[in-house]
Length: 99
Image: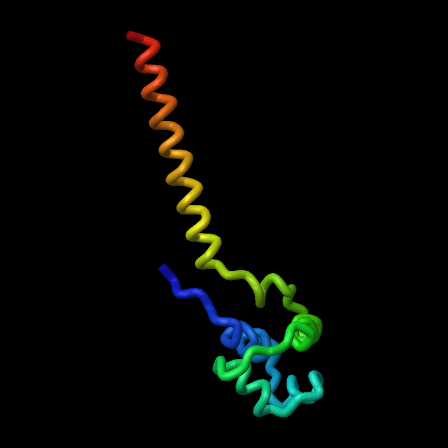
């Protein structure tokens, strides 16, 4: 399974996909290139307002930055397991009725 990108990696990917330097993105956000670097390597987490600005400038939806795919995969696996258990119970009830 592919390892999901961290928030910092997503910021870096969005910036690089537009061909921008950290300084260019920093200038748009009214931040230093060091601040952008800190976000990208995970030393700091951007405030929500800054993340909204990054989303706006990179034209990536907020969900791109905020989605935790590992959580979604875990939730889906739990739902599948619950459905399988319910199916086993239904099958057992149907077999009982046939007796």
